[in-house]
Every structure is written in structure tokens, then in C-alpha cells.
Amino acid sequence: MTDLLALTAELVDIPSVSFDEAAIVAHLEAELRAIPGLAVDRIGDNLVARTDLGRGHRLILAGHTDTVPGDTSGSRLDGDVLWGLGTTDMKGGLAVMLELARVVREPAVDVTWVFYAREEVAMVHNGLRELFAEAPELLAGDVAILGEPTAGAIEAGCQGTMRFEVALAGVRAHTARPWMGRNAVHRLGTLLTALEAYPHREPVVDGCRYREALQAVHVEGGVAGNVVPDSAMVRINHRYAPDRTGAEAEAHVREFLAPFLDGGDVVELVDHSPAAPPGMSHPLLRAITDRHHLEVRAKLGWTDVAFFAEHGVPAVNLGPGEPTLAHTAGECLERAPLESCFTILRDLLEHGA
Image (cartoon, rainbow, N blue to C red; front, side, top):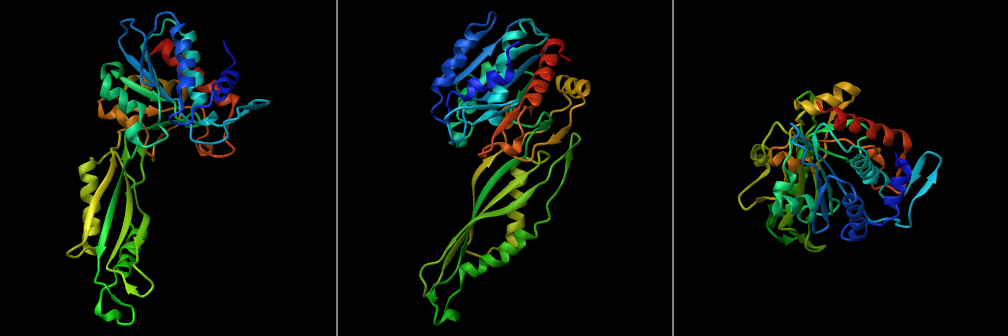
């Protein structure tokens, strides 16, 4: 078997900041096309490789090829620790996927390998979104595992995320005569205080405890140093658990905001990415958690598992990297969790449920 840390280093040494992934995609495509028994499709900078063995289950293993901007000078190996941009998020996961495709030639499940582009930027550019739009049949499966860094645990499903812009109205006046106006910025104070005291929920779904949140993330207001402002805006982010639909979550936020609104105020939903249920009841996911005694926890952030859940495919996150190191200057990956993740997924491919 290939040295997985060396294979990760090989991938790290091919820079692949979002929108500049052609080189690594070409490298991966050549590797996949050299593996007997795989049908390989390339759509843009996305690669899908599939077995067709007539097995009872089809497992999707997926990972993104891009990194955030950073030091693209390459990797550095120090003993059993590999340093470099993308080691954790998520070229270690890509190395596991590629080596599994090479060494497990007769899996107990049919496998779809998905290497997709532009995960680290706005959703409109996401390679999975492109694949679901252009060739959804290539992403059909029974369950999906994304190699996002989870330190070897399973992070099940994900919370939904939505952003609102709340525009509060006022009446403009001279600051020497403020009683003649209504200060829209001052009106923000009451709403911000309520947001700070937001009574969040912690629902348990399929044994996973989620924690919702409602946070102000941006404010705007003010006209000039001698003018009572007649408008102010706060942007609010809501993270909601997968026991609610998007419509239910939106209704909850609007109900929370209602006591702080007057005529002329406007609440607009400007962005929404839906939640995904844990899906841990699927036999393939139960098999690896039971056989390897894996920790299963809720994914509080949003990940691309939601794309699969929208299409009826249960999906979880499972990868070798330490998630707190993703996107940091000290990003690195240790050998032990990399090899452990490989072992867990190899067992699933070779023995199924």
C-alpha cells in the first residue's frame, strides 16, 4: 500500500486554490482512469468515478479538491506530521479516497467516487451543485460520506443556515433637535439586546444533539455627524437543527423579530442553505459506527451533506483531519488519524453492512 502521508504530500504540492484546480483535477483524472473497472466522467473540474458490480448498496465517497488561499509553496514533512495548505481540509481525505479506489478492486458495495471543485467559495460556484444540475444520475446512491475533517469521528447531517436583513425605519432630524425625529440606530439597541439573550434550542435528532443560534453579524446606519439617522440595518444569521424545515425556521425567526418591528420596517431573507438529517439509521452507517466504536456527533455547521440530503441520500462527514486546524496558518495532518480513517473506510468497502 502507498504511504498515505506521502500521497497527501503529493496532493498538497499541487496548488488548488478555488477556481485554480485544473492541475490537481488533471492529476486525479489520470490516476482514476488508470484503475481497472472504473467508469470515469469529467464535468468541468469535477470527477466522478463509478464501479458497476451489481451490489446491493451504492456508497458515495466525496471530497472537494480546492483549498482556501494561503501559502501554496508546498508541503513539509516532520516525522509523522505533514504541514501545508490543505493537509487537513481536505487533501488527507482525498488521499484516502484515491488509495481506496486503487486497492479495493472488488468492493462489497458499489462505489461512486466524487472529486468536486469550488467548495470553499460561494455556493453558487459549488461543484456538487454543478453535478446535481448537469448529471444527477451520476450521484445516485444509498448513502454518502464526505471526507471533511472530523478527527475520525462521524459528524452527522448538518444544521441549516439562513441570513436575514432587518431594515428599521426612523425619521431624520438635526441632532440639535432630536425630538423632532426618530433615531433608527437607537432602535437597533433593543433588538440587539434581545438577540444576545436569544433562548436557543438543543434538539436531539437520531441521538445527535444540535445547538441552534441566532446572531447579529453586521450592522449599518448613520448619515452624518449632525443628523439623526432615518434608517439602520442589521444582518442576522440563524443556524437551525434538522428537525425543522426551512419554512419553519424562517417563521420562527420572523416571530422572534415581530415585537421589535413597526410600520415601514422590512425583514428580508437573503440567503438560505437547508439542514440535513443525520441519517444514522442506514445500515452502512450503523455498520462502521458499531464495528469501530466511532463517536457520532451533530454537525453544527453547514456542509455539502445537505446537497445529498436534498436528493434523498443520507450523508455524513468523516475525515482524518483535525477540524479546528482547517483554514489556519498551522494547518497540519498526523499519520495516525489518516491511516485510521483509511482502515475504517476500507473495512466498509470490503465488508459492507
